[in-house]
Amino acid sequence: MSVIPAAEVQRLQNALPFWLSLAMIPLAVICTLTGGWSVLALPLYAWGMFSLLDAVAGRNEDNADLSTPEAGLKYYRLVTLIWFPAQFTLLCWMLWYVPQAMDLGVAEKIGLFFGMGVVSGTIGINYAHELMHQKPGWERFLADLLLASVLYSHFRSEHLRVHHLYVGTPRDPVTARYNEGFHRFFPRVLVECHQSAWQAEAAMLARKGLKPLDKSSPYWRYWGLQGAMLGLALALGGWIGLGLFLWQAWVAVWQLELVNYIEHYGLTRRYLGEGRYEHVLPRHSWNASHRASNWLLINLQRHSDHHYKPDRRFPLLQTYSADDAPQLPYGYPVMTMAAMVPPLWKRLMNRRVKAWRAQYYPDITDWHGYNKGLNPAPKGAPAG
Picture (cartoon, rainbow, N blue to C red):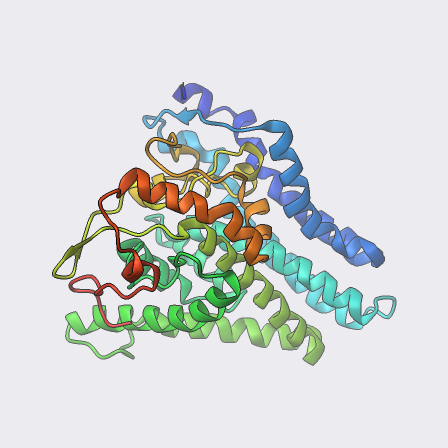
């Protein structure tokens, strides 16, 4: 590993690879106007092309100089700031055009909005994740808009108030348990994340002596924005447009939870007794240093450092060696596809979880409570 000097980090050409996601906007327009087999181009671009680029470009284990000033990150930040208007414009146009397009069959329309879900899930929710961690309120509001466009606004509460506090413990729904296949994980988190987000916000209001539906609850904003998105979809595309909007939202959420699944699979914090757990460490996140998929996902795969410093801007996220943090064999695009086939996933990952346990926790001989999420909830955590 080497450190990239601050002057080098700030150069435009080093930020431009992170702008490759924007190519999905004109690509979606071309697919919509062309139809046919071209409707497969968006998932092939996001999953296929970046997997191939990973194989060609290899890994990037260099770290940006942490002294790089905030102003020097403007070219990186800009892509996250313009993404919502770009995605929103595309979504509105497709909701208006596709339902009435006589030259598009039912399968093509469904395929196009599957691709739209890949855009709003793989990129949109990921950018929302970056923005919700930042201090300026208008950046956090952009995150709210992106999440509302896939009807998953509660993710902000669940991620900030639950996941980052309780990752690797039974209180965190999105820490995938050892030997839990994705097809069991997905329906579980769809229910439990709603519950945990609500409970976390209610507990915070209760500490102020307020009721769960106090006007200061973020849920009023969540419901208002989501209702507006549903109304807009109906106005632009009628009932067909509303159905297609719901389909893209489901695809986007599926993409998000696939990523959640692989980020912490089988990684648990040591239980210290009396409701106490060890602090979150780099070892509690799976990492991937694959260059191209980190361009696509704005360094989300440097996940250990994100948990160490959640508000650190993505170009400054640091990578870790295998001695400090567990490493995935492939980038997220390949790993999420593997997660859809549980026998393949377990063949790839279970031996790595066992090696991780032997490396960091050789003294723990009974993993049953960790595997099944049966250890006590962290002390002070609101009921989930």
